[in-house]
Image (cartoon, rainbow, N blue to C red; front, side, top):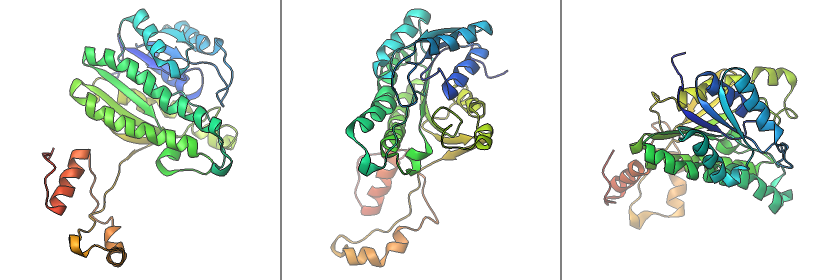
Length: 304
């Protein structure tokens, strides 16, 4: 195993089942000291069971690894990070994996369904990451994973709450990649398809067998290794398939300021929406420079 995590400290949230459990076990098998976080609630985020995280930590120790259990909700991420620091003295890797579902068509969705998803996925990832950020900045090192979803990237019926939170994680990751990159704190995003408590009721058994969590975890390990330098990237992954995802920007059309009108836009719509020679911007500076060049102004930004 050339990709190892000896002496590294890894926090995995939602590590009591499914993807998180697989991630935590794999990190430990490759030498990491793992904080197994899981509140032990249901797939809809109800209740708590302190034995869930303890069981996974015990399994890791029985296999010769090193792990501790944490049962704090991710909305109290500071406590998760404090336990990691108290026990191991550092944090090298954070995998934001905890998640629940509260699906409903948008016209039937209530505030409680929206809030539960937002608070677990987006707020929880923010709070845990924000707490870890200080330690990573002080150390000049860190690897962070945000777990998004195809529902966030493309939308999905009945998942307005889930999709909004999952796409919010992409924006968060993009910004952390910019702010942390110079300190070797790298943040990347996965959008996995995997068998779990959340997918067991909506997919047939033969499909679930093909998309086991074990086929996602290797990518997480790769992205979290010290030798990996990719930053601010998105990957769809599942069933042995891995694909990089990026935003596209059409070449578009620049109008004279005295000649821009709804009718003129309508007449040039095919040109505006033609992605034949699409641009793939890596940061906000690049797109602002492009806009400036197109309209003949300078935003005071240099090309990178």
